[in-house]
Image (cartoon, rainbow over all chains, first blue to last red; front, side):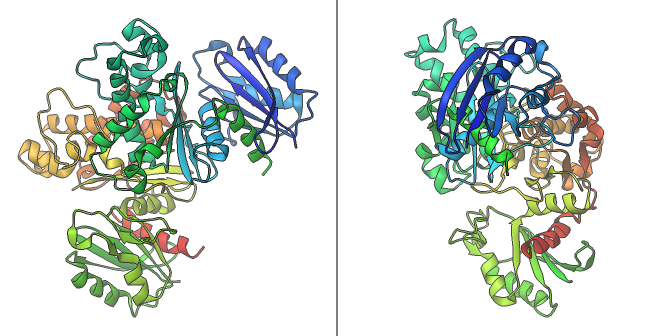
Length: 289
Length: 289
């Protein structure tokens, strides 16, 4: 059976076809321009592929409530050309196949939970730290929704007493994305993350913020494992720093075998940056259930 | 059909019988002493009642993993007489009925979701603020578990710059329970909450901390509604203060009809302090599915 996958990002659209085992046959990427330019190219790509279903993991916020009049829409995004755009409806009308739809990070959480480092676990979360911060939540076979969907890249943190950086999020001076996403690193230190690899202060401060957020997720969601992905997390020196600070902050309060063995509890993505597109294949599969 | 309900607290045990509609026929309360003293009294109460099933909402931490050797145990509680105690196993052996088991706050969340102020909503959370702080999470028909269960009373907060109180949690100087539970109020201000009703500074600071925690829960779990209960929340002047600060902290980032109408989003418990025991009735019912 052939499935289609669309990872709809704010800067690029990744399209792929693959099978039910998450094997990707073909993958192409186009820039995200306006819907008028980009959507016909997406439809064009998939239209003769004879896919059984399509999975879309999208930037957001998006409407995931199947009872809503605007189900399948990208809603209040600051990318104005895409605000209140009927992404699922438009593509479905053209392709006439079932479409599974979720946030990009819920897609990645699902990809890792199906084929990656959280496979077989009842609950897990996936956090991407790159140009923004997003959190996907997997629980008992499917991504978590709710009133909206998790927006946990914006959880509020305690600022480090020596950090005078104003923050890079227009909504929250002290949220995780504001203080720790790629643009925050670049603005605070005047260089890109990749050129700061040997500056230990950069990564200690980065771990200070990421660990605070992780402690909040652990206490609130109690996931069986946490996966960290995205461009910033390619700085692998962060992992031991984050693990140490998470243990320090929890301070022995949560006593589980998982926290005890924290090196296997807080881990990198296993799918080599294919967790998003593979998660879209799984979204397509789930839509056929 | 008759169901039994046991709300197992650190200071008292509340036992009741009721029907499938959550109507309580009889309710008694005994002090929590050692298991050797208290458990025989609990068994004695239920043994001739001919209940079909029992629901237990317990203080914790507890083991909720049905595949675990210590399922049904109270685990690492500081109440040492109850640490590593097989609560479910001991009672089940004596009563020979199915037993539903969860945290006390998950029980309350379930009670409100079944018969109270979150009835009919797919997801919701219940927060008790009293001698401690606990958070129960209801999702799609059942309480949320995970690696352990939510322990979100201990989420870490930013301290108010003028608050010099050391905190009352032995694990975390800056967690919600540490800064905002009943004992924190009493130690910080030198009086019990009930005697501070007219001191507006007390409630503004209290709302400052509770609102921070709520914003974290909203961004992470995205519940359809939030219920606040427990002794501290009997100070009803807190509700408008909390709602205002939640809106200020979110700063327009989450645009949903629920947040728009925040007076019906952050609400008191509807079951008049019976949410816990009624939730235990529902736990008993769910165990028969």
